[in-house]
Image 1 (cartoon, rainbow, N blue to C red):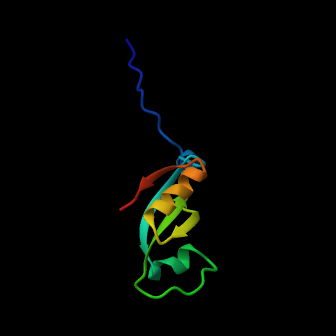
Image 2: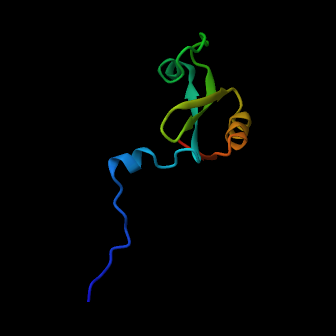
Length: 85
């Protein structure tokens, strides 16, 4: 009798595209972290806390001063938001 393993092992390429186009992550972020994540962003006062929405692959989608606006941006783009702590 053979036993089938129901687990699927993902390749690195499959893992890299997991959630692409369907999932976005929401994260509270300090203005000091923004420079490397949102290229071309104008200067923001140090210590300012904002909400950032990122695609599953880490690409920045939007930045907001309100969590609800960032969530609305995910919904408008048909993305399922998940929170990152």
